[in-house]
Image 1 (cartoon, rainbow, N blue to C red):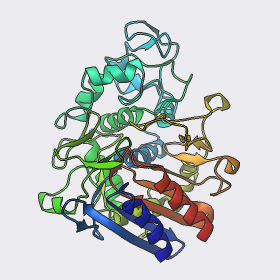
Image 2: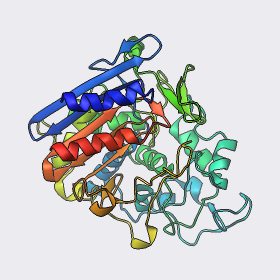
Image 3: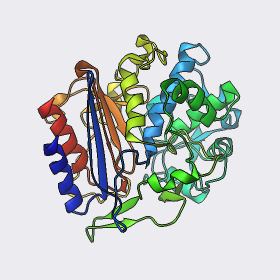
Length: 396
């Protein structure tokens, strides 16, 4: 795999990324490699067991935990969220997406569990340019590194929705709401729920919301790419953050449904391989095959398309491409629907997700393959993922 390492090294030589680690699992074969540094300033190399903040790759893990409850008939996709979270009972919605935060109307329908999975519930994100995202920042939603998920969701319930449920698709904090619903139903913390139901049976010992102090040296430093000056700027202060979203290393109370997990590439690879069959290497069933189909089958109606995440601080220029144009959305994962919009690469039904600091994974059941790439750059170049994807589908 020297060819792939050469391709990835160019991204490091261009000062776009500090270090990059990758792994491709295809049938019974594992290919892996690493280039560059955990820390650009000290030139500490990427380790086999480097730890990464995986940001929104937390979402698929929480989605699997929620789908387990669906199998157990503890939730129904049509359940309204107020069944579990009465704090949302007086929820309002903006009259339109550009209204002032005070210009609201009543809900026409209540958001459901299904809407949380599909990002059609009406929530937003603080980095999106709309009045609701701005309000999230004003009330310091998810700005704290010591509050519980319960406390954050109560704050969220004070903010109107951006749009009427089921009328639009906007990437959002909905998985945080779903994570809190898991806590209510199972009367436990999200950290413990994921540990008992996913990490322990899969023997994922390195994936968690907090890391031991003696493992801090393994954490890759987070950088932000400055497009104007073509430089990487290291995030020096802890807890690290995107915008004002906190991401602490050592806070035991910190668990979120939409971000917050740490993992290594080999540990998260265990999770991706499980997604082929729903069964761990040692035979523990995580999900049955019928439920697994929900994650890579598009569940959105035609009127939602095209789906798009405008940016996370990325400068929008003539070179911007919506990398979700070819994709639909399953229950917690994006899923490939149109090869012609994907440079005729990939396989229909290929699915996965990514994290804000340029981590990324895909699963392709038709090839019995999963692939992951790990690094730590906010506003990272999308060319890294494109080069990785192209290499995979021209060589396997």
